[in-house]
Length: 252
Image 1 (tube, rainbow, N blue to C red):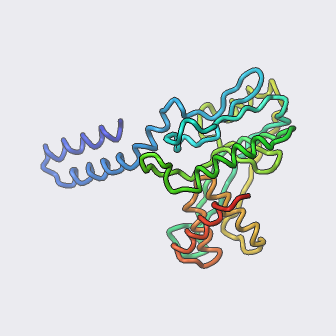
Image 2: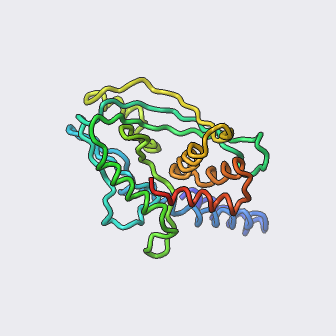
Image 3: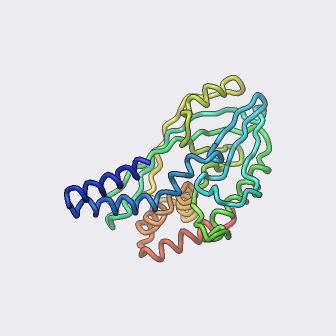
């Protein structure tokens, strides 16, 4: 709504002052509004939730809110009994990424995100299958098959290992408030800070490099994954994009 008000105000200003620059800026704002309209409106849909806590466990919505237009017949929620959660903690992750607008290896950008890590005590095979199916829906086709809408390459819930579920926390309330409530049901450990370097990967094995690139892409940072592949293998943009897409098509 604020963008609409700004655009209308600029049009009025241009008409009153006969200022062509105001019309130009209004047009830019209107274009941005059209481009980001879907992203903005998706945040306010009733389907946009991540965790719901009950006395017996957690309901976890593993479909990204950006892909709310996918079929509502798909399973998108998993249930974790409190008895299957051994511990939980907040991880503040800092990522060092190559600057996608600069061909030099010496420039980088810093991105941060908050993750809630749940250490699982039981068998995670049912989680593995559910998350694998969603991963196929997100990455295996360019469109969702309904109206030609694009798929967003974003998986907010991932299994980092057989017993570690990571949840990207970009919702309200704050992650710490959620963890405070979770202390009634399981062990909540102290928060942890981590740093991941996606710039200097030359010393890693090829398999480890591919794992890092896939991790970037699955977290929604496809541009960062492509930029990293360009720096790592000296690919041009087209080759790097094709390489990253081939990685995320692979079955784990």
